[in-house]
Length: 460
Ligand SMILES: *Cc1c(COP(=O)(O)O)cnc(C)c1O
Image 1: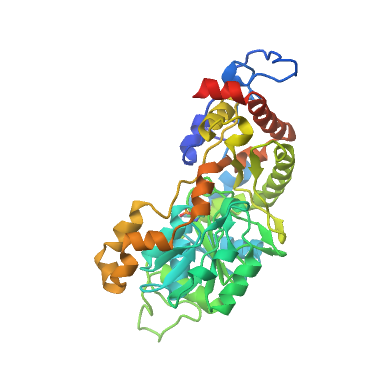
Image 2: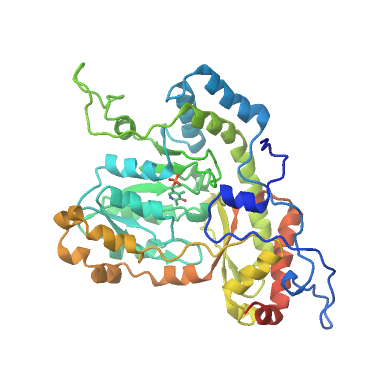
């Protein structure tokens, strides 16, 4: 089947390709809009009005051009060289240059980029790693895979990010690293995070899996801490299907990462004596030539797409931030550019006559606007208690640390719980639409706002 960018991809198909919990797919039907009361207020689609957005599809994701992308992929196939070789090397050079680091290592996915980076900073059994609770589970599972203990730092709801003011209270003699996650593609406040890390001698690994080409203080995220980790999973702003990368200026660290991802074979400064074989413990997490071929093609459109997302996000924000009950993200002062993997805002039913978030999302979907409620609370999910019961953890940590009641108390993040109950997300592909698409989103929200009482009655 030809899936060139010009072909229609239904929202159902988009859902199949990009798994994001709760993302709705409702296409409204066209019915004429009446005037409500004495003010001209279009009827929401949920009440039988015309959907604010009724085109066939939002910009599809992922996108590719048969001329460039398919050609490059076919070249790899026809070469017969499919395992890691020159194409991967070329991709790594380009990715390092895009992020502004000396080196980059391409690996199987973003999750394992984090696993490798932690392992090669010698973080493992008995160590604590500071993470935010408002993140994708992979940030936390990478810590657990290394046998370390995730310790949660509550978020600032206005920015959706780890709150630097809450970091120091969570530091103990076991703390070895901080993983700031530039969640939604919005940069964390790196200056205070770096200052705290320096004071306590902690490594900083930036989880930049949602933040390709985002910029803080004139530097790309992923180049600010000791290492950055990226994901190229299908839904991400740089989609390859699966894939990931580590970025860093530390050559010795990168040599060890390389060696580790290639079964401990010598590489660069990570060398042993000639003929003695593998020099360190490793595993196999190599990128393939196919992935690199797709990545090189995708990279050519990433910058322009990022600019479009920034322009549309700024415009959309300006159109919705005055609506009572809609509180869009705030960017930190030093942010030059965000990546907008998602466009997030907080929803307050108070501004909508008590209309629940679920009712609001349902009404928006009827308007033709795909949206979701985003992450659920992560730091109380059963995988943590289960891990703490494992023989490995019980050998390493004192019983009190593994006591889940004690753990939950220490890791209580009330701001995050609130955030999870009030967040609304639009996915990045919506931000690749036109200015009038952004107007449609804003007018859909305004319609629901102006008719909140009736929408509430109808949706509950
Ligand atoms: C996607 C993602 C990851 C993991 O990347 P994969 O390539 O899916 O393994 C890690 N952290 C965050 C914040 C992510 O969004």
